[in-house]
Image (tube, rainbow, N blue to C red):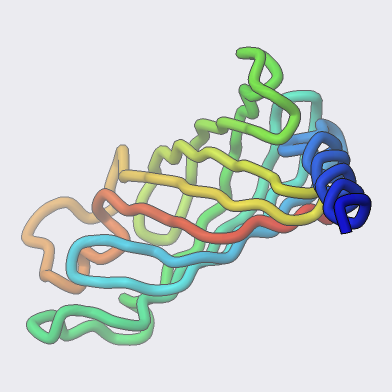
Length: 165
């Protein structure tokens, strides 16, 4: 029994040590998680493709499933899509291979914005992430209806990340 437990621990630690949060050129990550913002919660997905040792491009889409009952929002107002650029700093600042921190810029349907995220991988293919973002420049700035403020404010994403490398 002790041998079995020791073998499982050794296997898990080996898998843990081989995890790569960002592997550079041709690295591919898919994230799915919850989107949390004022007056709404929903689901978000994102895909990142590595262009170089520390940069990636990608896309993200968010749809708010639950909104405050005081906000009347159409399907279009609940949805947002963005192209994104990220700089991966994990290896630059000396974090382990399983951790990545990535700031970046977004160009979306609602605004031009900033995001900052972190990923932690448990194994080669599975990890968790958290991100926050906010708009730098909104396309419409005056007299925003409550539904127009959706996706045009501070938001937080949390969820799972998958490695397609």
